[in-house]
Image (cartoon, rainbow, N blue to C red):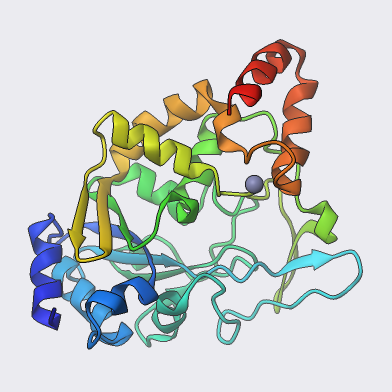
Length: 282
Ligand SMILES: [Zn+2]
């Protein structure tokens, strides 16, 4: 498979000029099928297709939370590595990419979005109101591209948790790691109102989309791609997240973060009988 095969594939599945694309991608999986495609060439291909009338967006999260034992890192948008994959690490260093100021959940932005979201973007709910994801939810022609990844990488799932007003939102699940709900960057500390939790179970939402034919996969060899309108993910997702909050947590006793949030959910008396039934059937 060649570089031009990759470009043709993206165009074939519907990538076009003027689209705003949030990408999650695994370079290891891309390289298995397109061994000569460098990360730089991959990113250049995407930018060429969507053009500067559209946008390319990637999470460049660094998770610089304050820690109660003082062992935290301090986020510097210029130097802090992205902890969410090698493609995002190359992307954030491109000269024309703007990286946002969120100490915990920054994004790399290229194209039209930079006229609307500035480098100082750091909402108190990093993936909620006022975030890059909130912008994507409100503009036409916005899409999510999953390239060699599943929904355990879906940052937009955290936005859906907030839209669905899930009961555990105000509780940080990371206290067992000494993580405080405070971002630390070179510009100071920021108290966070909502801290995104564990995303592993978002694959249950992906399965739901698949079963109900809201998502279709495209393959080149072992590499799987999904390309979804944000409007669909938002509409179907908000309803699914409201109806199936139990499906958004890892199975009981397998994940401390999810167990922390499950306890919060069980405290809600109106939900307790329902969750017990559903958790047992997981
Ligand atoms: Zn979990």
